[in-house]
Length: 225
Ligand code: ADP
Ligand code: AMP
Image (cartoon, rainbow, N blue to C red; front, side, top):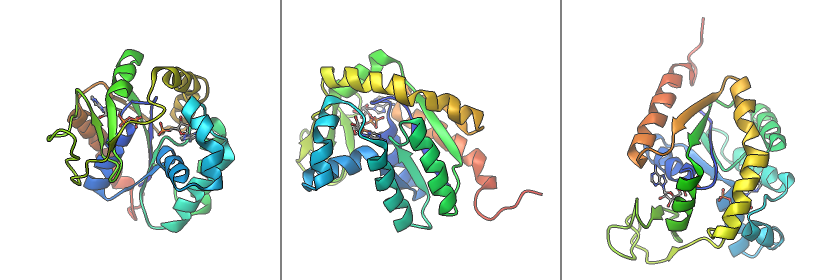
């Protein structure tokens, strides 16, 4: 089963993707995480995209499509959660072709609906573990012990460079201009499922689980008559 988590920055895509990894053995493919990794490992591509990311703009389609292609090819039998990809119609078309070329299909697109005021609060309070990637929030999901990651015990808790008011404005504008048309695109393909992303994390997770469980009979080798 392959799914997309679709929604603006701060909608909860990464949080839910990590749960799906744990609960269903799927693999999260976050282009944002891949690009941040490229930056810290000092690759040529990482240097190229750093300023674009810090400003909150989108990097070029060919870069992210290339990153996703590598990951899909590297794990031919995996079930993927696409998180933060696709973000443009060109990326969505490319993903469709990529999956087809690799004998895979897209099973569902889950839109996480969150209003803009909530996004600002979520982004302002977000921090992540620099070692294992667990996502936290000052108010809604703080670490149990101050300054220590619940999952791996690391004290390397970090705030993203682009989680500031100025970059967020650009990121939201990019979302509405370039990514939100994907909602109609996937609706027309019959793949769209919308979930209330304003609900608590556990509630959102069970809403997503209901959507995926309803799809399961058509997954795997089960054939329809
Ligand atoms: P995205 O990957 O869509 O940018 P994240 O998963 O990083 O979003 O979530 C953004 C922030 O909001 C994080 O600090 C996270 O802990 C918090 N968060 C995520 N989902 C919820 C939720 N359902 N309710 C409250 N806070 C949430
Ligand atoms: P994210 O972690 O998904 O919030 O992404 C952080 C930043 O990485 C974005 O603001 C973009 O600059 C860049 N980025 C991530 N994914 C994509 C994508 N699919 N297309 C273009 N840029 C992306």
